[in-house]
Length: 377
Image 1: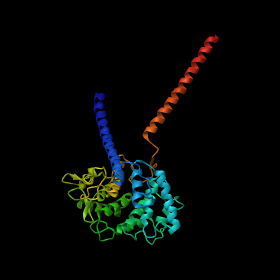
Image 2: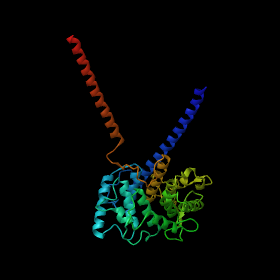
Image 3: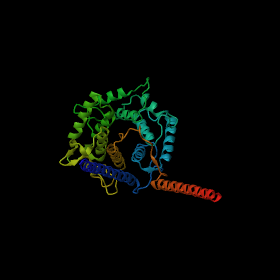
Image 4: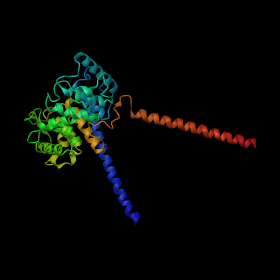
């Protein structure tokens, strides 16, 4: 009787695991498709792009986010070449200006995140300690001079590598959290400046605050921001930013929900009339595999495609039980262009074949030795 009961239970467990595996497999295919779309949005073809310094100069926002998105998605590309070019950019910018920027803290934040995605150390990159210069001891006035996004991405960058905060830090994590909370509007939203409301910045603020949910004040502020995002999602499953619905707003909200441990497909707050946030993001997909910025755009947009790829990667990580998108504690680095599954399989087969030959030789040797001993008798 016990065996009869156990078998159905085991079958159910197998079906559940198979279903979960299928869902993750489908998500992996979506990530791969989005990566292909990103490359296609740039030049109309699915080819590795990070060695193309003439069209993707290392150190520019568009290029760095592309390198980051492709690396985190597990795509093969010329990451070593890009890292070398980015290191040169840092060295030359420091030599020319004494820093990456004394006006925009996000210049440091973006490069720090990119360096981490490339599998390198931002504390020792291009002859500079980017974490020290760009976060803890930033000399450009204030991290928030350019708006709340300065505080947001400085906090994200500080937490990305779980960097130890120095005792003499000019800017601390606590200060960054407080400054972000101070910029929240009464309705729960965030904007570039207090008083303005923007879905992208509201979602970005949630991404930065995600690791601090045990703090009651942060949790309350996050809940208010989620309510605002839920209420302002359109019937199409997207958001209006600067007068039009955009793929980027959807992508940033997906990243925010995933950072908070919430699957957008399973949260009723982000579904209207059967249309989910993920449906809204997919509505911007174009025939070339990329994503348009606005619904009125016929062709895909590189920046929109970057952000959708990041969103899909964040969702895949969540569904696989992995760390949030901008956390690099378990990250092992990108997949370089020369590394391919075919080469790995060939290497494994070759090793197995070599092992088989060695084993056969040893067995033959033992057989011959045994025969010799028999003959000697």
